[in-house]
Length: 280
Ligand code: AG3
Image 1 (cartoon, rainbow, N blue to C red):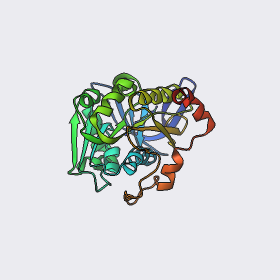
Image 2: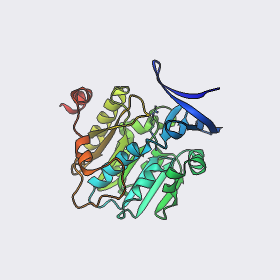
Image 3: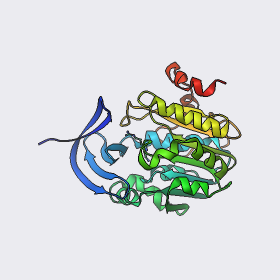
Image 4: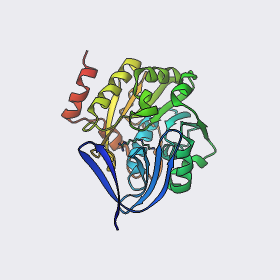
């Protein structure tokens, strides 16, 4: 008998993966966690029925979310990741030699345990000596810090449940306070085709906190619509260009300096989503 997993991305749209087998299923304190092995995308970690990472395409997402801010900051020594319990963002952060400390704040320890058990290519991120993992609420953690980080990366789930507050202006204001001068905030901001409302809300919230924000686009085959967005903001500077002084990590599979610059060029339908957020 064939075994399939489907994520119902919207009430009218599903993405289906034929499975080899189910590896792990658990009700954690926060969510329903599932790890499956799929024919097309390798191992897949899902939370509350939504695909978080697949072994095959996670590099599109993690390389964009991490290297956009880290290549745009002149000296990113202290980096904070909110969420990202699979370890993929940490793995990419640790490719940068200049990084002295990578702090991860994940609310659900079960996600990290599942990643260690089933997703070794992502969980390698936890093994670097510069990494400091905290099990805590990211919103509260950021609120308790001032001028403590050069880059903050928000590697969250969709804006439902505990992640909702990570998409609000108040959180972005706390991030601004927690950043050192010249610091950059980078967040995953969902699909402009399926979640235009979220894309707009993030832009408005980050504009309120930082005075401006910049949207980058990239492909993400297993996320809703396959077109994903990342939003960056900084109180000083412009994150839309990689800095020539920053060395490019080796063996990247998606990110290049040219792709960095190109990802901020937006098609008209995306400009339209942002228009009310950017016009006076
Ligand atoms: N965080 C973004 C997940 C969003 C996916 N949404 C969905 N499948 N409906 C991924 C975390 C990876 N470190």
